[in-house]
Image 1: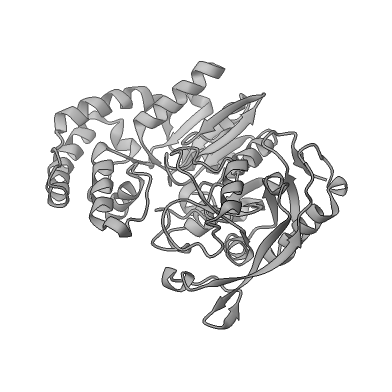
Image 2: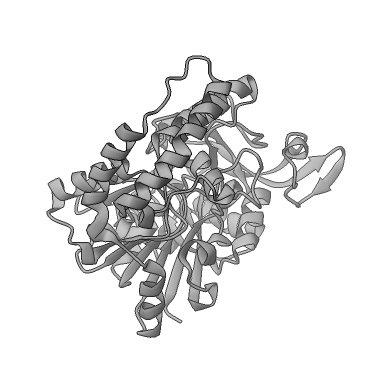
Length: 427
């Protein structure tokens, strides 16, 4: 078994991109298997900063094949724009290094309009989506009748037939939700997306077959997670979740490759907790400490630029994410963001109506009632960004990391003390 997976264990934005980038050079193929251009990685490579959304981090390595697998939903325009930025900075990306699944589903303009109409109709109860049509595309995927896959997109006759069936129905549905809606025209969408199809056609293939053959040939695969476990459509803080299985549970369904080929599952956590959008957040800090963490950690969305909600590390929620994905170890990221704090808190349990629990609840109504029970540890008040060995960490910083490992229930093998590749403690 020669596959590794990198999974975020919180509400996303755990700095997975850095670890994926570090591990990529040890692998032959990097696989993105879920989500769309609502997810983002910031990667510092060769001294330059790259903001990736749809493209796997493997795209920065010339010797690695990048795969966008079946479980991803693709906005062709967003993909081509992102690929174009990479080509401008790093040169051409040949089709044999960038594969797109012919089973992946396609995002169309009506998906974004539909999502905006749904959010507008919910008013104060809006989920807080990125308005990129991700959820509505997944909705069509599950509903089947309105779904268009990449294999359909690159077939002109099939694309025309599908749009002629779908677009009139979408127009009627969206108009019922939004009085200001301007109907879409089949010809306009067909012309635009036919142009995308011509550019994408060389990259589109049966990635499931490709990956099966790669496994049989002993190639080393790296599965790149997006978002985080607590945003999983089935197992997260529903309905304030993403529209796919963003925990380790999604690897098989999203890639077509059995989890049994994975030899190591690495869970990625921040040294604190953040989340974007609506939904309960037991350890949220709506005060100067929360703002301090946001500013020092630059907690603004890679894709949206939205400020993230910040709070203390939640070992209950994170431990749940770790068990859900079956991780072998964890990487604690952004520990340096806590350098300036006098004391630091970790949520070790919840108080639910007077009862102590370490179970993460199934329903957000219950999560909203959870009161965090904190364990307080002293801060280290020292700049740790130059440290490269675990033994050289300040005693209180090391104690903090060890407390995280104890409460989450898995060993910490990687400690990140800054954004650069070199600012990573592996020993």
